[in-house]
Image 1 (cartoon, helix red, strand yellow):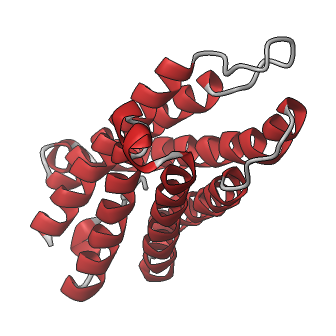
Image 2 (spheres, rainbow, N blue to C red):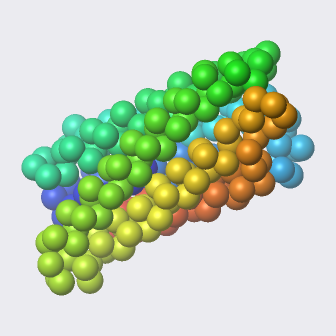
Length: 199
């Protein structure tokens, strides 16, 4: 989801599919946390939306990792690993009968690792673009790296806020988890659109 590497190194076809995959995944993660959406479709369908979004993220990240070269390879692989952890957490969240300790172990832990992977890949990509000099900082590539790093940071905050406190059985801050997920997804969507537009 960091969509962070040098767009000019891609052919038009791969860039389009990578951008579309990240865009569809972002839309799922943007819509999913809205309480009105959950009330409309139900918790099970909402969990399916998140899982579907994670699959689109993984497909796009895999395609990106396969296409990347040089310094773009490492952050792309880390990002791809992060999407796998989101696949695990969103798949498990579709099952409803978990105790609080199981939620933290089976859902929150993979989500936290996935968020850490995203943040790590986003930082590497952003630093790579900054190291390229002033010309790169004025490019679409820099804008994509910056907006996606912000999205990675927001997903990390969301992960921390969604930790289920064993004593209460409630998320640490469900409202913060929801709005930071939505804002992070919006950042990824903007990055996707910039990638598609710049191809």
